[in-house]
Image 1: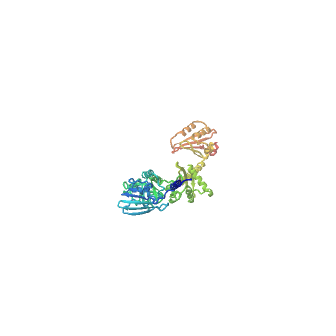
Image 2 (image 1 turned 90 degrees about the vertical axis):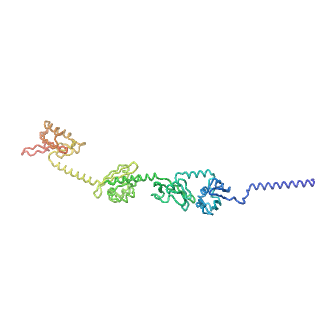
Image 3 (image 1 turned 45 degrees about the vertical axis):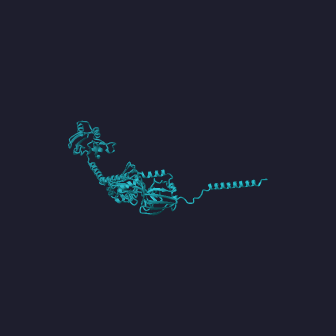
Length: 499
């Protein structure tokens, strides 16, 4: 049995052990549950004459800013996206409070100034969650934006410029002759044919530069990118001048010209087309399609009326297809009596040109000439003597019925053109050879223009023919055969009787 001192000693050791265990458990529980901060460190920055002089550790870490190395503009660049009203400086102001317009929440900034010192306090820094974590990445983004060759700038919802790159500042100085500010916009008026095409004039040499603007909404600001399109504008001007030159060139042509581009729209026409088609200039200037163009022609009765209107569209489609292949050429006879010669030509770039020519006068002249020829043929056929006319080249161009009947030849049915030599062989085969036949060869081959040689040819049947060879002033040759006259009691001799 233990003595009283031993019992006391054991009891004291047990109590000490139990106390040590409780202390260890308390320490372990404190390691698992981190202590709550009694007062969070504020996000505060102090600027002296625009240079970051001091910042709390929490603010420096979140903004990646180092005292002595960053200034007021760096802080403004970091906050301008969410606080578009962040001031460029605190001149003439002692206090300002800003509230972010970002959808994440009402984050606020308090700015106080006194003399050359400015205090900036940030409340609720959740808006910094999307910032890059490394200062090197921020520097890379700044360098990329500042060295971009095209002007880039940001505007707040009131239209004030809150940031711009070096290219914008340079262009602003060349155009307006002064440094940039938040109120003066470089691209203030749209002068182009399209809403996003704008032009600025440089103050030094009055040259004009064209830009295409693109806007991207980013939170509370709008980011603008201006891309130079001087080459595009110059190409459009060159094309426009070329088209105007073509229009002036074709303006005095009597042939109507209609040029359609590869999409089938009218891009060029001349005044003659208006006169020939009866289509007004506003309609043609509206760039109608090929189908609309020919529909209007039909309505104006300036093309042949189709026999079957239901197949009209198919016929027009075939016409357009033939023209685009370069194989369309037709003559249109109109109700007015006019005659149009229409030709479709294809160009290498896919364009199609239609040429419309009024050939009414030529067709009338051709018809009259054909009528006169028919009348002359009838008169020649009425002559009893056999007659034949040869061109200077020796080709038979005209003969009468008596000539064909007597010599038993049909020049119209011949496969090839008959010549004076072909006819001479037929005459020699039907006549006796002699001095007169030799004289005929000489008379056919050459004689004085305007002279007439008379010969007597004896056919193998015994009949005698009087032959006259006349060289006309135009170089043609006229050969005429007449039967020798009989005695009065015998009556006249006809060539038909000598066959």
